[in-house]
Image 1 (cartoon, rainbow, N blue to C red):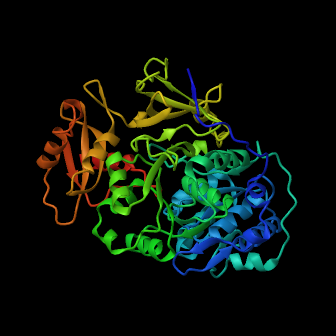
Image 2: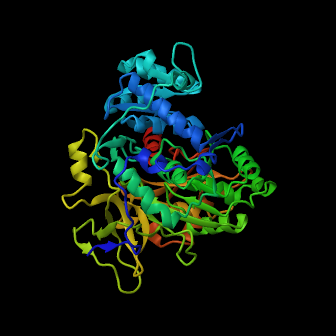
Length: 530
């Protein structure tokens, strides 16, 4: 049996993303700050943003971008990101956002796969962007450098042209808006086809649980090029006429300085930032009293870690769950619910239906009348589910079934109130002597150790060919911690089959820009060390 959201369905208007976000901005709203550059304090108002969006759309149309064609955006979080991203959509184009950390080879792969006709970038990233564009045949005139560079148009050039935004017509339900690429934490990234309706739907669905208000000032450190930052930060904040304070990359001192000086009220993070907020001594040197809420996503947030952040900062902490394939949010702990355990991801959001399926037998797992269900793979259905993977019918068929359910690949439970808890990724569960060991559970436990700054766990083969949990541990500065101490610490707190059996100390846990542990990098490191 499936289970639905406890929230009533919300109306999802049949509009393009541009019309949904900016179609009804009145004069008073037009003067409000939309984007604030965290480094300089420069403000872009809603009126100014809309003018820039229309100018970018006009310039792209004048250069031949047709409805449905792809333009790539390769940039960290700067105010101009919003102008270009929404300018592409306003022109009827499809935006494929590229990770700012990508190499030329990575960029070229995405440009080729998405068939991008234009590439927007910034001067610090131009060398790799230029090399990738040359490799795939994008001419220099179509490589637009936002802050300017010799031989390329700049954003200012596009704005100065004054070309009117084109009249475009398409069906929001079927017209692609964005092509983010799945993070590749477990394999090769795939282009996720999301329509205008997908993006509009998810902003409507998360409005009530996430609770952004017009007076909020949101710190935008999570990358806009990632679907979490794109929907939950950029689009949701703009829809509510809130202000976004941009940060190009995470730096703890800069993060704390901007929150304190700009008096940010709502901060969206991934768990690695939560570790710093809970443990780093610098936190006490800054006035963070303006923050009323911290919302974590992109990877599991441990309950004890979340509580430590809430207690230290005196704010509420919430977490949610989603995937690029779901635009991305499917579950969130509502901002006004203090009774839901922080190690859950909360109830299903409005307009969605889910089921749990035993990955071994294929049998559906019932939602219990009392207590918590058995664990099973989480399947989700709703208006925010992707149209499929670009040019990959086989992967689409493996992920989307005939009934419209997305098979998430994540193992979860549901309780009698509809609250969902993610146990771990199905592909990442360690199988020790027939028992399933979730790496995320061990990682959360390791982070409670005062001498451990960060940790990641993968399965490795022992001398007998048995898969065993191995911890990669980052020590706190000055900590004197050895392998035996780590193994003993975990052994005292878990069942025998969940014990960590190997430990390696490293300087940094590899993570994606969105904060997900890159276990494939750790597996490659393990293989190289043999």
